[in-house]
Length: 218
Image (cartoon, rainbow, N blue to C red; front, side, top):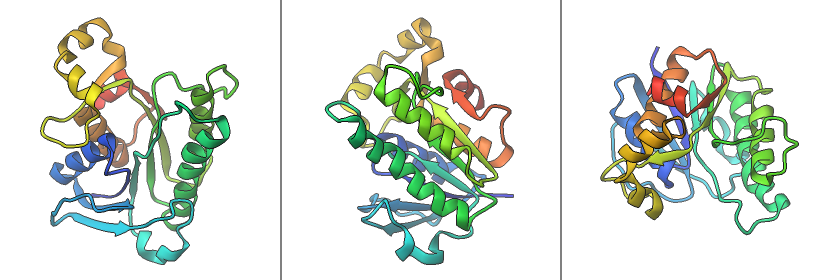
């Protein structure tokens, strides 16, 4: 079986890196990018759908059928946002895509980029962690073959890609020291992408993957 994947968020740092890994991975047969603007790449594996409303996919019809993996890399910072705003741009956004794909592709594995420190209880003091926790929990209830939550901490960007955040790029040079000091909370973007392909193809015993799991599978 080969991996036929859909990627959301390919114009951001994490999504761009996951797309890079998929295009170079021998087990990935095809990649469909759903985005508001072109990702700027050409590849025999790659198709794109430009779509403006990420809360409604009814206009796409059956164009999302026939895929067995989704790598959901869309995300926003909670800084400066109310809980209602952050919930709409985090929980509602992910669930809209996931509900559509679960209906169209029952054999799909859904991989959601969450974050280290996410609150699975949904009752903690940290607003972003509660919202992420609810998103993880409700994705797991959908009728996918499997749903996995990835909780990276600091991610070292892939050299040569354009979308890395300035801080990540700057700290990327310090990655060996960060790995030594806080090894359980850092990983590379290559490891994130490769671990996603791994769970889509072979599964994994844990449905929530912390940095140590991402490192091992990547």
